[in-house]
Length: 431
Image 1 (cartoon, one colour):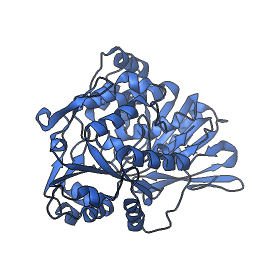
Image 2 (cartoon, helix red, strand yellow; image 1 turned 90 degrees about the vertical axis):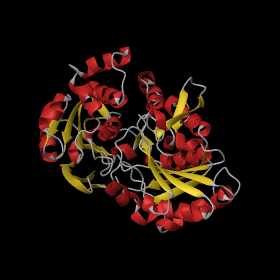
Image 3 (cartoon, helix red, strand yellow; image 1 turned 120 degrees about the vertical axis):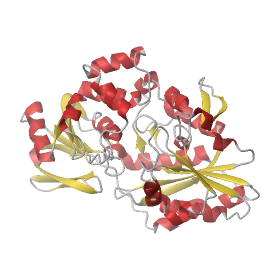
């Protein structure tokens, strides 16, 4: 065992990310099946040096970013929003310095997908006030505003791709920053996801996240090739003209452990290979799985915590129990997600409604995946940001502490039940 999980002679100690801190747990070794964690790899260099090295050696493209930017009058930089742990205070100034163009108009487009827009204080916290002042304009993407999208063309899948109209400027260089980690249905984050769903219109996102694709066995964490959701994202990024990406790889402390830069698909593939090698673990099936959503900002609401639950579902025995810890400072998040769960008699009822088309609206994919988890196992949510009554109406159980949750889990699974710890759920590829 390694990382946050420490095996002693008769006790297993595990630290689970929770908000900006952690929740610690100790169990007798005889109760523990395993501790599944990504392999930590230190960069060996300061973050700025790691990024600079990636920018000096772009993948799949001739010449550095500065050469691509030379002579451009318009440059658009797409950045992840406040729900993603991209260290934009570090990445943005390096990208701007690399561009080093006094003639170009450089805009920042914040990729919100279907998320709520960031407040000014959230923007300053994430990007840094000084960095924001270096852009000629800051645009927050609003996927539901039709007059802010433009039709980029028809994809081979039949999608009529709609993206933010800021991408339509002729002769513009479009760049994106992001981070790569396993993603529960797109395979991996980063790269093409900056466009779809990042700055795509709501109809395009709905098309990409359709019920049949969510049910596809290849729409899962760690799968790049053949994943229908990821494949369409890749095609969309090229159609929309995303010309260059800088993607970071983060360690357990959310510090930069690696980076890739260059042509969108080539750089992203290289980064995904690095993440896969570090993150893939063998399942340790058990009656109880204890996980987290890898702390803030990914555990800021219950909607996001479905990521951790989906990872845990890959190593829990059918009929078992999943315990997940998460601060949920923003509560449930995404009201439609909550209403879908509360408005269904059971997880099976919800899945029937989604698959039949009776429910066809934003956030159905998150509800669909949670319902699929609940078909396999009971879920206990440990969170100070959620009301017990709300969690229970969404077909889950609530606990105010991890100790309380484990007591309940052993009641449900039986006193001889074994426990598998998955401390960094979304960052782990369970194979």
